[in-house]
Image 1 (cartoon, rainbow, N blue to C red):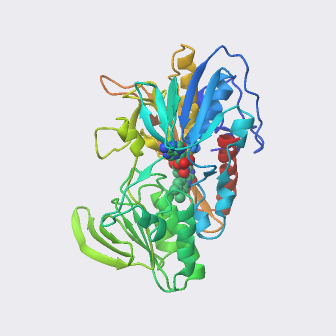
Image 2 (image 1 turned 180 degrees about the vertical axis):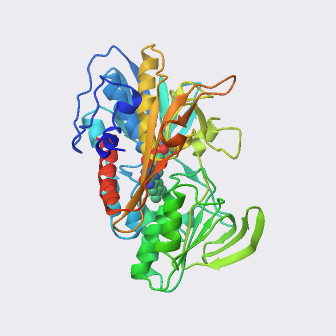
Image 3 (image 1 turned 60 degrees about the horizontal axis):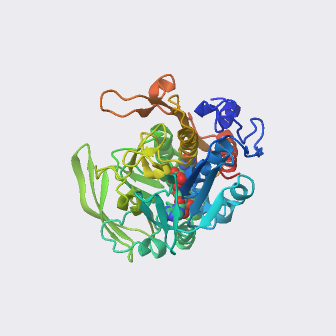
Length: 453
Ligand SMILES: Cc1cc2nc3c(=O)[nH]c(=O)nc-3n(C[C@H](O)[C@H](O)[C@H](O)COP(=O)(O)OP(=O)(O)OC[C@H]3O[C@@H](n4cnc5c(N)ncnc54)[C@H](O)[C@@H]3O)c2cc1C
């Protein structure tokens, strides 16, 4: 895809909202701050819970497309957002955590979003209000839930605190990312890192394989004789198979030891010992095998936060612990006044920040239409991109375009990859290059700027 068009497609083109202002200039990565329209005739009171990739986007575009009559309150637990995207490069010292911080200043000062720095502890759908952890409630006409994910305990673990102090998953950027970096720095050369990957769906499909590559690259240069052993619960590499297989078997031969079909049965956090079974094509090849790690990085299974479970918004299928939605509006299938976007929602699109941004815009457009009594747009298209550093100077990428397809019979409509887009499959870079690495920096700056300013 042409790079300029691709970066520009982050703005409004994908939603068919031609004519409405967008906040991004096609030929530049400098944000253009369009004013919030004063009088669209549309009024409403929308509360957004969570100011990450999807929540910040929906808050911004509700104001930009709804105008000053649409009051938007963003309730976010943290004072600022730390991006998960690019956080693997904090592990190798190429970036600092501070360089991944984004404030809500522009959303408040320019777009007029009301910000509440608090954690939401409950949802009362009947009363149309949310409860704050420190006390107090906030009422809404429409509620948007964008709280990201919760992480399960690995078998054998007794407390989430073990991730904070002993075996960081670092699958939400923050102190655990720094802890994992410190552990890598402190490990003796010649000893091993063990990384475990949960069964899909999980946040950022290429992310674990990306982490394996950047850690392997760093080990090669900094810890002679060390290896990274990967226990993947999936039967095979789930995305960009050619690129990652090549990296694991050629570029990092002798450094990466990739083991598919592994189910972790026990994690001893204090001693960093992991026990697992492995089977390939249904044939058991290892039972109660144990690995001693110098650094243990278990990426846990993931689910929508408890907040949504308690509100009864999750799928009844326990293998899909996320919130089913109408993908034209992101309205919950349980309560049409509640919208769920980002990683917490259950759709056919990947759990990714780029898609979260697109879902935020789709949802903002839908709410503006619903508040003004107009029909939903049925021509929704979203796009997704994940750039993946393979070494400290080269990267690959994966991209897909999704379009709404109406359901048949009782089956709901869904988002599918456009058949004309690579036969309905995501497109991947043909190899890791330094040009891709430059594009990755530009894509990241564009995506984050577009979401938070
Ligand atoms: C290592 C790594 C690399 C990645 N790389 C990419 C990539 O290259 N491309 C890509 O597209 N995606 C990537 N991702 C995935 C991406 O980061 C997530 O999919 C994305 O952040 C999800 O957006 P979200 O809005 O659903 O949740 P988040 O961005 O996690 O935001 C959720 C927000 O809600 C807040 N919150 C939660 N609960 C409450 C509550 N009860 N009350 C108030 N606030 C609350 C949290 O504090 C947080 O700020 C990567 C992820 C990881 C871990």
